[in-house]
Image 1: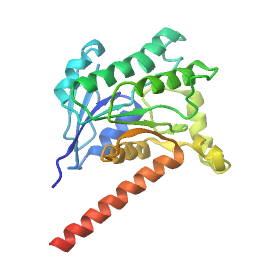
Image 2 (image 1 turned 90 degrees about the vertical axis):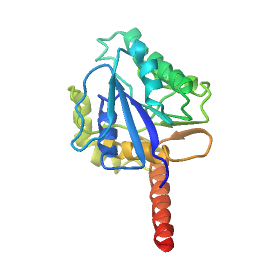
Image 3 (image 1 turned 180 degrees about the vertical axis):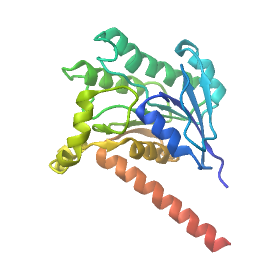
Length: 239
């Protein structure tokens, strides 16, 4: 049996972080260690560690996790930051980059970051501009492999209330049907689907920098399913 991939998750208390923890339950191909500044509820059946620390000390926590892969599901909104652009940037840019650097120091080979569709250095809006800036900066951190996920509207239950997003989740299934061609990248994505994509990418060995929008995320998951199917067939033939 192959050695489990050690994953260090930052952003465990968010939508994607929670979905990733649930996705790891019952799996023996990954070992998940979450780093968080506050307690987070573990899903039933979970066998994983949660290291609690102030973000200033996350470097030590990430080192203790001994990760092969670091996953950043960090993210906030201008509303959550009380309209303070500096506070927003300190999380979505500075803390993400700090975690990436700490991961390198801890010996991680791969960094997977959840960004957003439309991320662009030249975007007029602060949210997408900062996402574009952090993507560019991550490319210079020295990882053998960097995966950036750019999902559209995320579908799932959050702890905090986001009224506009809630409305979007209701109309998303119908709106998705109208998005074709290049607009497909704006289709919504369920949090549990994104979590499965993250786990699929954590098993890929090719080196380089990869951007995954809607279709690319589906291809990554299909590759993993095919690889697992082939491995099981080979194992069955050997037995």
